Every structure is written in C-alpha cells, then in structure tokens.
Image (tube, rainbow, N blue to C red):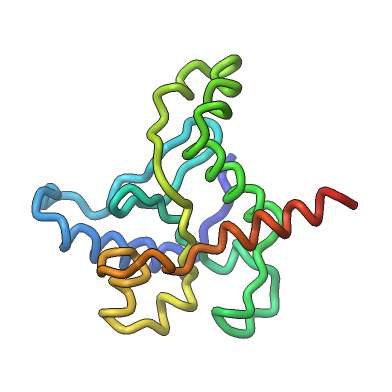
Length: 160
C-alpha cells in the first residue's frame, strides 16, 4: 500500500526534478525525475541536494483548511514520518537497532535532514527563491527545515 498522491504533489515533484536535473550536468538526458533516497520499508525521501534529503509535501500531508504556506499544520503521520526519517538518516545507533530485524539498514545512506518543502511555498516562490528552498544557493543553512519544531511537537504529544 502506498498513500495517494494528489496532482499538486505530482506537479511539485516534477518541477523540483526539472530544476535539479537542469543543475546536474551528469544527469542522464532521458531521466525525467531525480532519484529518491530509499530507506527500505521505512519509506523514502523525494530528493537529495548536497547531502540533505528533501520531503516534497502536497495537500495530503496537512490538515485542512489551508490558509497559507506558513499556517499549514502537518498531520501526525507526517510528523512521525519526518521524525523517523531523521533518526534513520543520522543515527548509527538507530541503524544498528533496525539491522536486528532488517539487515539492509546498515547500508542506508547517512544524510542530513529531512528538509520539507510544501506545494504552497514552492508555488509562491520565484526562480531564485526556489533555488534557495532546495539548498542550491549559498547561505542555505537556515532554509525551511521544520524538523526541530516537529520533534518538539511529537515530544509534547507523547507525554500526555
């Protein structure tokens, strides 16, 4: 089973792929999408830029109603997805624990992130802002990563 993907999400992924493939002179010309970063049964990130994985979020990742890109609220499933991906991408201890029941976990790539980009902020961004959102511009250390906020929210939710 895989979660349904909406048209805005498909469009976001296609536009991000187009931009990233244009940036990479080594990309095969017949390729139409950038490869995802797979973590086996734990899921996958949509793309990777300079060692940071990206999650490209469409409407299905958020509670309704949609007000604006800064007021969106992730569903609990999406918060857990980001938390799990962060742990699996960055922690050797977590990988070794997972390897007890899924040995291939030891071969998963070690990356930063995930950095989340939603369809509304992408749609409102101009070309240079889109490059910054993806981490293609210099000075991107503070680019839209919602993981710390989501980690705090998950901790608060698990206390009660």
